[in-house]
Length: 378
Image (cartoon, rainbow, N blue to C red; front, side, top):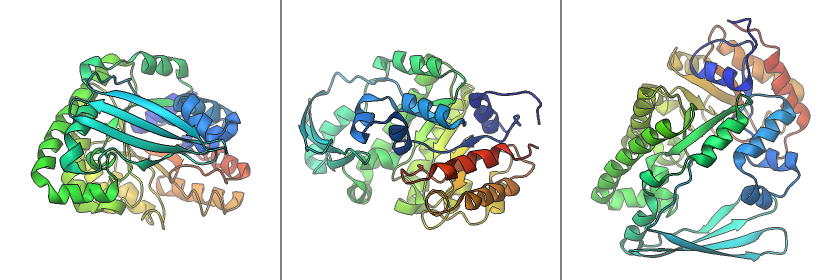
């Protein structure tokens, strides 16, 4: 416990390190919906014109809270030339078609940008592995020696101590595999082409280690972030996660720690069957520990015991049943429940079970923040 007053960034970093601050950090996961609303722009405009780190900055200032966000290096790739064309839909959104020419072929990606909802992919680049895989490989590994860190460092320096801006090193392996072909095809690819993807796994592991090293050497001090879209037990099950994704996390954490950097992993959905595995990787912070039905966190005392003194929990306030459908009193009750389970441990950030929805009443968001602010420290 400390009587010193800390900044938003310092509170988050200290929690990652298992150190007390002046207050219990509270970090609602504002991502797309709330920042777009705070800035007064459409979702399509937000995604195309506002860097996510800047939108989050304005949002955290608006609500007066801690938080985290991500930035990443620019990754030019001389093997790939991409042309884009857009068609407006007349409702404030548009469809973007990107055509990428590589030494091994041409790939097309079609994406929909909506005025109200985050964008989604309509057509992914890999249609048939035999036909498209080699061309995708040309796109998938931008030369690390050409990475440009200027924009990322400018963002880190601009944010300073206002909130915790992290550098994204990349995603877990199954996300890497499934992103260009979709989840179902990604699962089938691992099953039908085991030797191809075993070789790719080795290459991706080496790439992620080199990427981690380069980020540590070329950016100002910041934690590293590993994202998860489909690489979780809810979608691929605990066994496949251990086989394909756990080694990637372990490799990144090991290299990051060698450089004195912290690592934050996003692992949504059901997590309890893989929580011991995640702790074993040595990761410093995990989020978002979702409650049912999206997740399976029902016993916070068990979570605390499994995390021990090694890993910090960020999350667990239910984004739908509590923040959207509940009352301020429901929110306060849940925050106090989380804090009680972690009483005596500094390894806690009061966060949300994934992104705060656009329907969330402001009084519930403020109830979460204000209740966390009133919690005793120590």
